[in-house]
Length: 342
Image (tube, rainbow, N blue to C red; front, side, top):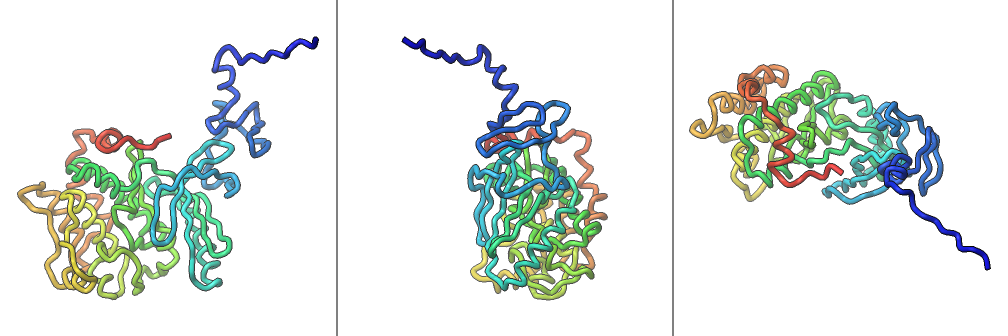
């Protein structure tokens, strides 16, 4: 009678753990093996596969496994995806472009320009792909979601945290405006993303970059109506400073928990309110003089009266809470629901 072959597991889990990455890939030296095959990948000093960088040019859609849908909109969906070889998470935005073939290809080509965007306050675009009318954009994954998501949980954001958030958004806007010559044109809470490290980054500027002209002036009518500046919502030419109006409304909404303009029945009523009525303001009995002044500098109806991102970074509101060491990382991870840090 042939003896039975007995296979026993290793005595310690560590014995397996040192050969397996988080993505379930067997590793030994430069060799990586998983269900998708074998690959030779250089490793960092710690022995783990190095994180993929935007400049590495080593991403392909075939190497990304879908985890779940984390966002839906009129233009497409956003999926959380995981790289098969490194275990790194990304956000994959998939957009269906129902426009002419020549324009689709132009947009796909232009999106690749955003790969050169390297700023700590702007969501990183790793790669973009075009196939059969669909554009797929691989983006940095921000595990805290958007400022809109966070605001639903906390209702309002106190001034010290608002100052820290606003400082990062302004640095992102200054980069887009002065370094990349980009008008965002759709700055709103859902396009400002956060993570567990306390980082705040601007997203969804890629398509805006395509339409922005080299002169910085546009008369196109694209974006979310609610946050549009008076010159934009009335169809006039607009420049980088139109983003500052949007920033002012975003900060005021975060402070009060309500959108600065009452609900309107139609677009035309909103247009009338933005163009003909006095601009919104921060109630002086509820907020500091510095915050009220900052909001006023942002929401001047005449674009020439608004301050630039660079000038606003020196506003007293942004530095008045520096002495209390505001911890955005702790605030983001404890004030709302637990973040999906994975």
